[in-house]
Image (cartoon, rainbow, N blue to C red; front, side, top):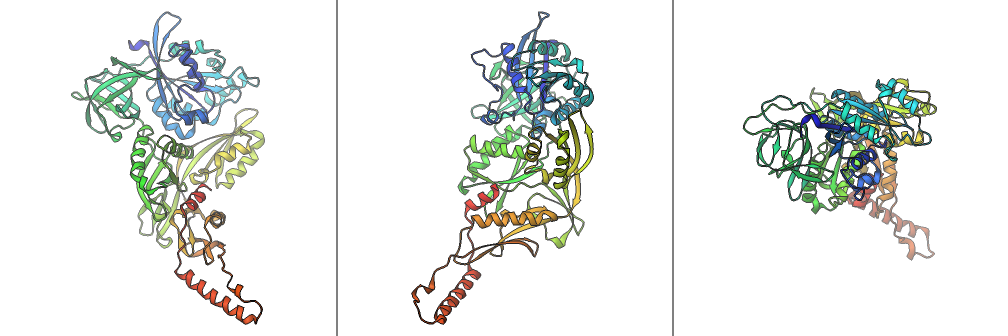
Length: 596
């Protein structure tokens, strides 16, 4: 199709502001899908996405639309996730577009991720079309939302389109605005093919299926192309687009998005943000997006050790579909062989574990999540540590620096005191507060990443009755008084329970772990001490009492010394057992403690 009649756009919004519903409506209105095929959350193909009502993967889809001026247009939509952990998916999608629909819920207004996603779009110089959605709700406040658009995002309120995706209001206006306001794609002017790889997935029959956006030249079956990052030359077998299911096409021209299949068998050959070019006359690479760095690390182990190879193959397939996920082999005394995996955040970690269980049928266990610490040794050497087992002895450590994040929390005015208390509890410092409107404020603070890993998001939601929202971005490293907390069972350290914590919080953490271990470790013939220790100093202790055989049962009557003699003999035996005995911690105990 003529590039002047092509429009590439994304939909960006805070989580749960209605972008999936709107994309369903656009598909229906343009006749891409029939009423019979229509179902809610059409582009969310994963069960997990449907259950949680969130978008995890960006989905491309091609629609044909006949505008009011009588011309036909090809609209390429890339649906994007809203959650902060998947902002990498959003930045990838935006680099393949010329415009973006910004959806704002009329009842909730501008939220933390709305702000973050608008900044991403502005960085890419995209044309932004604001859409105020859910105007049919009884408590929708359109005037206030327009004011927020102007005050917080510096976008004219009058340019916003009023819509209700659920009721089908304003859909025609949105389609017309896409055609009129979003600029058509312009060729880069290079002498040969240039196409951006923005996603991929693995198909059992076709191998690696690569999602591309053509910036220059054309793609068709039978031509030889080169992947610039890996330097591989491949022959294209099939090209096509999505509607939303893949369908074959003759060729993809300038400005069009779609997919290609080639003889690529290994997931490692395709790099996100790579450029496809002509194998004979190569063009320079397109300005791709930055390499992604995982923020949170956790060990993933198969519950049945014989599943190790099976888990390894499945992680490779999953990594192809989710390029922000990284892994490398590691082993643990307690859990055997497994993998150290890196994630963008806690929701990302949860989703990956759930996908391994559901889509690949794996029985897995994950260790306590941790972050990367920069450890400066007394010799002046800098060491990166993401696993407590690799932390050097305290006498070799000069200082430890932990990763920090800048958090933006938007909450109603009445909860500002509670929010500040929560931030202080998590070792954060509020830099400044900003009043957004008569009801809400935005708190900007700097805090350690490992403090927001576990329950920070949940606590915000419970404190603000669900009205709070947060977004965060990486903000360098800061020196901190971090220590390694070891858990000793019968005086032997168990590496799976070790963690790196701040000295002030070590005692609370140690007590909680010791209490949990006391519940799950089976009783032995002798008393078992469970201790939490920092170096040689024990800071918390619990004791699993011994199973006791009644040795005095045969003494009825008689002198007390006979009973004492038997009890002393038993005591000596237990002492000897304790010095030789080793406590076998069952697999279930590890799973229980790691869940807690």
